[in-house]
Amino acid sequence: MTRAGERAVISGIGQTRYTRWGGITDRSEFHLALDAVMAAAADAGLPISEIDGFTTFGGDRTGPVMLRRALGIPRLRFSATVHGGGGGGSCGAVALAAAAVESGQAECVIAFRSLCQGQSGRFGLYDPYGLDVSFAHPFGAFAPVQHLALVVRRHMHEYGTTPEHLGRFALACRQHAHRNPNAVMGGRPLSLESYLEGRMISDPLRLYDCCLENDGACAVLVTSRARGRDLATRPVDILAAAHGGGAGWGSGPLGSHNQPLPDYPSGGAREVARDLYGRAGVGPGDIAVAQIYDNFSGMALMSLEDFGFCGVGESGPFVASGAIDWPNGALPVNTHGGSLSEAYIHGLNHVIEGVRQVRGTSTAQVPDAELCLVSGGPGPSPTSGLILARI
Picture 1 (cartoon, rainbow, N blue to C red):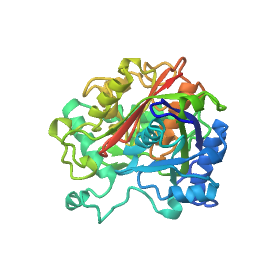
Picture 2 (spheres, helix red, strand yellow):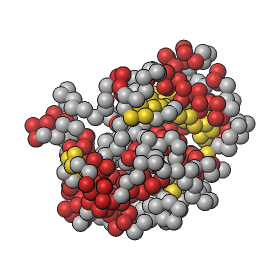
Picture 3 (cartoon, helix red, strand yellow):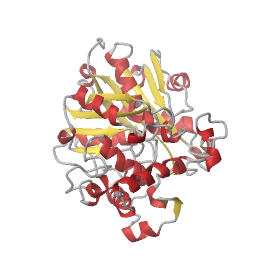
Picture 4 (cartoon, one colour):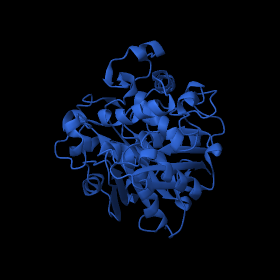
C-alpha cells in the first residue's frame, strides 16, 4: 500500500517499434498504446491488474477509460493530462504520475504517449483554428518549424551561432543512434558535408535540423519506492520533477512570439531548470548525462543553456568542442539518438533512455551515470524536466 509522502520511482519502461510516419499499418494508435503499457508492466514484473492510473500529454487521443477496459484493469483511481502542445509536457506527464503516487491517490501509474500518424493525421501541420498562432499566420508562420526558425535565427544573430554548430548537434545524435537497434536512422550515415547540403526547410533550419516524424508508443511505470523494491527491475528515483512556464512567456514562440525580449532566444525553461535543481539539491555540474528534447537542433542548443550546462550564447562552441559526444564528451547528450535520429514520440522516449542510463543498460552507456537530466520540449509553454537518479 502506498503511503502519502512516499517517494516515487520509475520501475518499468516499455516501447513499441518505431517507424517513419505512416509506417505502422497493422496496429491502431490505441493498440500501440496498449502494447507500450503491457511492455512497461512486463519490464517491471507487475501484473496488469495492479495498474490504477494513467497520465499523458500533447493531446494524446487514447483515453484512460479505454485502456482500463481493454486491459481488464479492475479500478482506475487517477487520470490526468498535461495541457499545452507537443512535447512540452513529456516530463510533465511523469511528474503527474509521481504526484499521484506520492500523494497516495494511486499506486501504479502509467505515463504514456502513442502516435500513429498515418492513420490519424500528422502533427505539426497548419492549424487554421489556433487562437494564439492566428496572429502569426498573416506573416507566413504556419508550422512549428517556421515559428522556431525565427528563434534560432535570433540566437545566431545575437551570439554568432553557426550552421556548423547546429550540424554538430545533429551529427552527435546520429552517431549515438548507430548503436541503438530501435533507432529509425541507425545505420544511415550523416556527415557535416551532407548535413550542410540538406535542403533548407525554414531558414536557418535545414532538413537534418528537424525532428523525425514517426509512428510508435512509449510508456513509463511510476510507483512508490517501497513497491518498486519488490518488482523485477532496479527502480530509478525521480529525484526531481518540474513543470511550468516562464514569467511573461505567454504562449511563447509556438504562439504569438510574445515572450520577453531578453528570453526570446531561449527554450523558455530557465525557471523550470531553477526549480528542478532546487528540488533535487544538485546543480548542472552533477549531471552525468542528459536527454535534451530536440524538436529542432537550434532549440536543443538553447536548452543546454537553459539548464545551465553552458553559458547563455555559448552552446554552439560547447557542442562543437565534442562535449555532448559519447563516449568521451563531458556531458553525453541523447545517447539513444534523440528525436533527430531515434524517433519523435514527443520526448517520452527521452525519459526511457534516461532510465536506461541510470540502470546501466543504454547502448551508449555513460559509466557510473548516477544522475540523468531529461528535458521537455523547448518553445511550448508550459515545458518540463526531470532529474533521474540511481538508488
